[in-house]
Amino acid sequence: MSEHSAGGMAPVNSSVAHPARVYNAWLGGRDNYLADQEAAELAAAANPQIVPAVRANRAFLGRAVGELTAKAGIRQFLDIGTGIPTADNTHEVAQRHDPGAKVVYVDNDPIVLAHARALLFSTPEGVTDYLEADLRDVDRILTAAQETLDLSQPVGLMLVAILQYVPDADDPYALTRRLLDALAPGSHLVLSHPAADIGAEAVAASMRVYNERAADHAGATPRTHAEVTRFFAGTELLAPGVVELPDWHPGPEDGPAPGLPMWCGVGRKP
Image 1 (cartoon, helix red, strand yellow):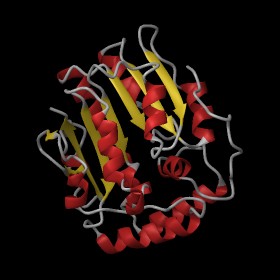
Image 2 (cartoon, one colour; image 1 turned 120 degrees about the horizontal axis):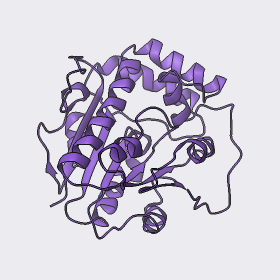
Image 3 (spheres, helix red, strand yellow; image 1 turned 180 degrees about the horizontal axis):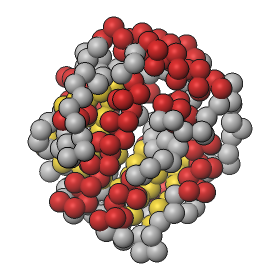
């Protein structure tokens, strides 16, 4: 595993909540600080559906990677906004199906980098790499990813629970399109996003609490079904389309859980 970092690791600010560490707290992990725990608890108190949604989101990631590896022949993944490693990370799911699968993880939190370097071990046949970068730095992400991935071949682009941290002013749709434009036909976009139109009042309340605590970030923006569907423009949406998390190719262990405030989907670049 290598680090492609321009300028080295920045000091960790433990006094302000960070998305990856708050997410880790919701998952019951230990790789977070008091500020993250407080933000997680207050947001979950405002919207109790957050914790089951986060866990369902992790399950969706695993199902999507499994589908792409087993059925679509995808053997390389670019996972942006990966977060702190937990169970069934992208490379673990992919390499169960094909030990030679390659994965590049991208995140902008130094604590995520530290844990990734320690925990994200590839199979001998495959490759797992890590890049410290922000989603907005598309050119740098693509340049560094090409050291590991062959962008002339299909790639699974993972934007799972990350685009809510890109405000409309930064045009998250253009960022997504630039990433997809650089990938080969047959590549797939795997995306999930907090919903503005499922339990809208509770979602808005939890986002306000989170945004107040995440003072050094732009905050989080939930989006409607139509707004999330727009991210898939130019792709062929796989059935069943943009749906609630438990409804995307549920497995035997995935029971019904209506009302979880997130949309998800997978689209294929023709």
